[in-house]
Image (cartoon, rainbow, N blue to C red; front, side, top):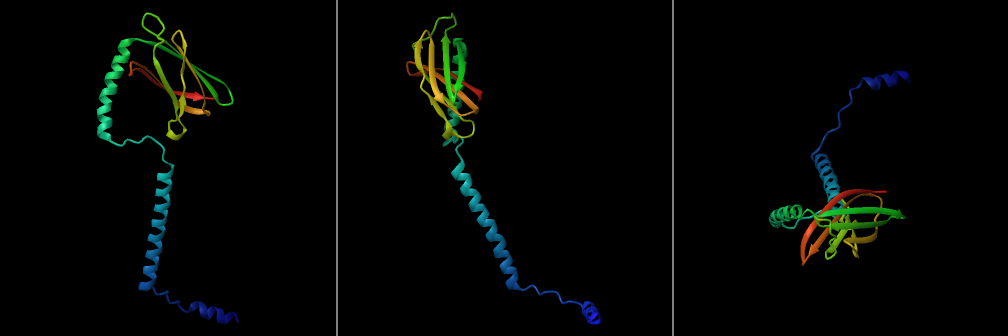
Length: 172
């Protein structure tokens, strides 16, 4: 019996023939897998993207120069804006802002606007309902989860934005 096993080992085995049909099936399977993976990845990319979108880069470019002029005017006003951020617990956040002019007088006739902007997911942004308290103070309470946020604060007067602040904050 052992002698026959050795005899079969000595006979060279004929390689399997690669036919045109086999090549076609291999190519179809390869490209089929590539297409399926691309469709899945594109679907996830489109359905999960919530970042910043610019509908018109031309309009964004025009807006940049207007923002630059507004920033220069803001610096020239020399306002003193102090922000206190408290976290009393359970993801509740209290934002208190005090705005003073260059002489130290409170600015109470401003229209405030603010939000916690999530840096990577605009769907998680939390608007701040800033209420004037008098003496140049404004306060809002909001619920924002822990992590990094951009605290964006705007003050307008006569329908025109006079002040904008955007600061990255780490919420506990």
